[in-house]
Image (tube, rainbow over all chains, first blue to last red; front, side, top):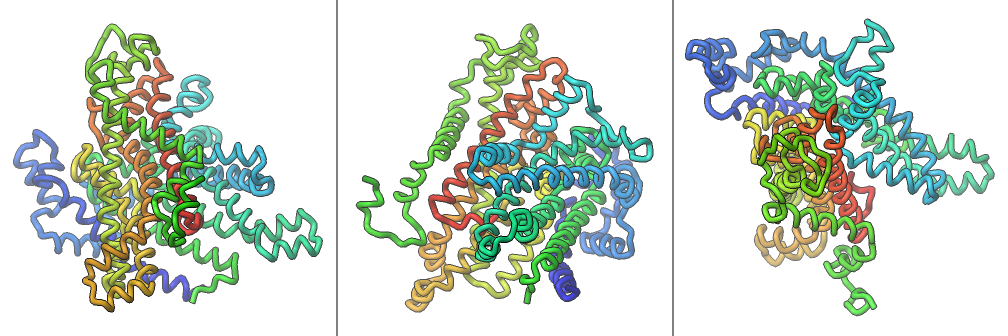
Length: 314
Length: 294
C-alpha cells in the first residue's frame, strides 16, 4: 500500500509541475498589456504603472514564475491583485461553504443513487428498472444550471419554502444552514445520484453473472446474504470509483451552483477571480483543484486495493 | 432480406458502414434521436428564413407575453420573439459545440496517433501533457482560458476544445497502440511504407469506431458546457442569443414569467439526451465493449 501511494505521488509530480506552468502562463494570454487590462478602462498611466510595479510585471516570465513556485513551496500562495488579501486566507474563509455543498451532494448521491441502482439490479428489465433507466438518463442529460433555475422557481419563488439566495454558516444555526444547502446540493446531487444508480446497476448485473455467484446460489445461500455479502461487496468498488470521480470534478459544479445561489464558496471565488482577472487566485485554484484530483485518484486506488485483494498492482 | 445476408463476410473487428447503418435502423430510439438532431440542425441552418421576427427586434408593448398566434413561444422582458431568438440561439450554440468538438478531435487524434504509433519517450511526454490537462476540472479550465482571452463564441469554442482534447487523444492512443501490434502493421513497415502512409492508411481507419462514438458523447457534454459558459456570460455575448444566455435572462424574470426558463432548458436537455442515445446506439452497432471507456 505504501509503495502504491509513493509511486503514484512520484509519477504525479511531473504532471503537477506542468499544471503550475499552465496555470502561471494564463495571465500571458491576456490580449494587450496585462497591467492595462487589470487596471480597467479609463485608468490613468500612473495607476497602470503602479499596478505593473506591484504585481512585478516589470520582471521576466522566468523570474516571476520561479518566485511564485518558491512562495508556494514555503506556504505563501500569493496576494490577490484585486483585493490585496492573501489568497490562502480567502480560500480558508470559503472552504466550509464548498465543503458543505460537496458533502450534501455526495450524501444525496449515495442515499438516492445506491438504493435505486440496487433495486434496478435486483429487478432488471422490469417496470421499475425501465422507469429508473429513463429517469437516470434524464438526470444525466439535464444541465445543472437549468435544474437550479427550476428548483429555485418551484421551492423559493412559487412555494416560498426555501431561500433562493445566500448562505449562513453552521455556527448561526443548523436549520438555516441546511435550508440554504438544500437547493445547491439537490442541483448537483441529481446528476451524481443518476451516475451512481447507473453504476450500481451495471456492477450488480455484472457481478451477478460471475461463476462464484452461481456457485453460491447452487450451495443454497439465502438471498439476503447473497445480495449483502457476495454481490454488494464486489459491486462496491466501481461505485466508489464513480463517487471519487464525481468528488474530484465537483469544483466545476460548484462554480455554477454557488454563482446561481449566491453562496460565497470556492466556486464563486473562482468565477469572481476569472471575471476580475485576478490571476494569483486563479493560478492557485487551478493548481489546488488538480492536486485534489490527484489525491482523490490515489485514494480511489487505495480503496480499490482494500476492497478487492485481487487488485495488487505490480 | 437485409444487407448483411447478401454482402460477403466482413472483418469482425470493424464492420463496414452498411452493416452498422443496418443495425442503427433497427433501433427506434436511436433513429428518433437522429431525426431530432437532423431537425435541430435544419432549424439552425434555416434560422434566418424560419424566424417570424428579427431576433433583436424589441416591442415594449408586448413584453413577457404567453404563447399566442402572433408569438408562438411568447416574448421576453424586452418584447423580443422567443421563437426567433431560440432559432438563432440554436444556430449559435450548435456552431460553438461543433467548432469545439471538431478542433478537439483534430488535435486529439494527431496527439493520440503520434503517442500510440511511436511509443517510447514521445508517448510519455505527450501523455504527461494530456494527464495534466485532465487533472484540471474542465469547466474551471475553460472559464479560466476564456477569462484571459476574453469572452465570445470563438474563444469559448477554443477553450472547450482544449478540455476535450485529452479524451480523444487517449482513445486514439489506446486503439493505435493495439493496432500497432497487429501483423499487418508489421507487414506495412517491413515493405517500407512511410510513417505517414502507415498511420493514415492503416492505423487511423482502424481506430475510427470508438472515436465516432466518443464524438457524439462529447457533443452532448459540449452542449452543457457551452450552455454553462453562456449562462455565466463567458461565451456568446448578448444581444446575440444562445441557449445559455437566454436561460440566464429568463431566470432574471422568473417572478413575472416562470414558464420562460423551460424553453431553452428543455431543448438543451433533449439535445443532450439525443446525442447520448446516438452515442449508445452507435456503440451497440459497432459492437464495442460498453464498459471499456467511460
